[in-house]
Length: 103
Image (cartoon, rainbow, N blue to C red):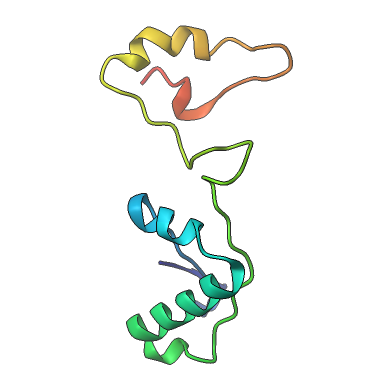
């Protein structure tokens, strides 16, 4: 859970991540069940959040047809084998960032 603060240092929002088996558990919940579960977990971890937090958005990278996961994960040796290919544009698509970094 990461707080997002304003210029005065007041928490304006929270970004919460779930990975692995916990993310899979959340992905199978419908919106109502997920909302109740998240509120109960927030209350358990931080009791003062009760009644003071609204869920504005839920993103499932696993269920996103265009993402199908949260980030790239390479096995040992794969980056060296594929880096030169990943750095080349494919039609109008250009890859950047950690996927094509040399250092």
